[in-house]
Image 1 (cartoon, rainbow, N blue to C red):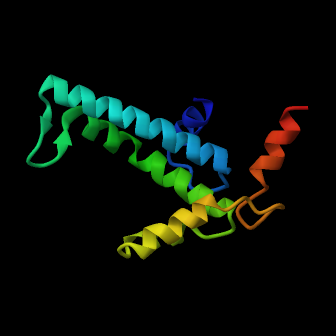
Image 2: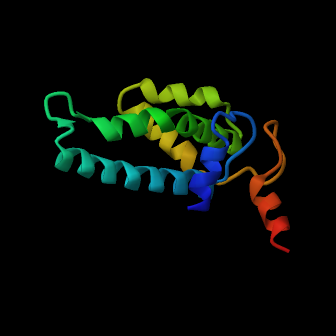
Length: 127
């Protein structure tokens, strides 16, 4: 849960790097909250089957859009790629798969043009 809150605290921070743990835990909690809100939308009668949108889930999605974008860009920075690589995901089928592979890759070991390795910084803090 701390990684989810960390990503929310860096609401629109597009500089720097985000380690895999931060990105994937944010994504996990984001999906769990979204599923919960969709269930609430359905039971509260706020889900519109015609459009596929629910009131609470849509408001939540709008609220976490920028943090999601920011943590994804910081994750791409962590693998040594520019945040502009996220635009690759607009190419049908192949684009999202390529971006997914980039997000899965491990951090660059040392400092890169986007900052120091956050994994090394976190390890130093635990001593």
